[in-house]
Length: 263
Image 1: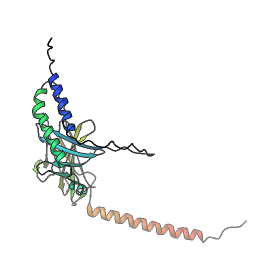
Image 2: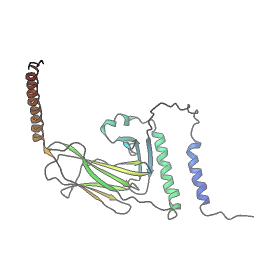
Image 3: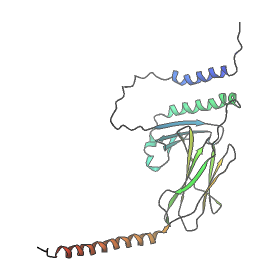
Image 4: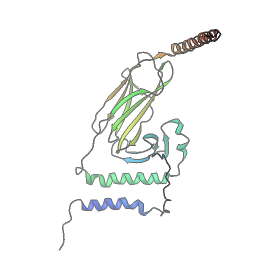
């Protein structure tokens, strides 16, 4: 007797086949050596995440170490992009370019072939992004600095980041760095080089394209000292401490010269 196949059974078989496909091409490796344990061993996590979607960006890769993002990947140039200049030397390693290309093609195939079959059949998660703006270095008027727009609670990672100065658009911002964190949610960073001045007003606008939600984070200088005043203040403090040390030294010397009383 023929049995009617349940809806979704064929899709489940397809997903199982797609999952096993890259492993079938892999070269068998020798079994790993038994783990060695040391007292006080700490756990660290290196996360390599490839994502693709219908929004912007349509493909992305992020690599992080203990939730600190190290690199993104420029698929148009087939090269890693360091989030900070200190990571530039490590970004030159391209020995896994073929594996990254396979991950990209596999991810895009899932979106094009499997995605339409799941449309409307599974719940869609949403996370409203939360931006905040701060300076990369301590604030000093007239000294070059960098504004950081940090976006958390981001899912899916479809966003556009723009900057404003006194409500006027500002160019020259860095590319937006998107990284995956624990729990398959995302965070993003945007950087803007600037020279702070009194009465500055900068704004970071984050447009979550999937629902047209646009939160805004503002930055104004707080508790800043002009650089010259800061230098004068530090010099004055150093001079005051020096004078205090001299006075205490003289007082201690005079006290040590007093004759000891004998009963």
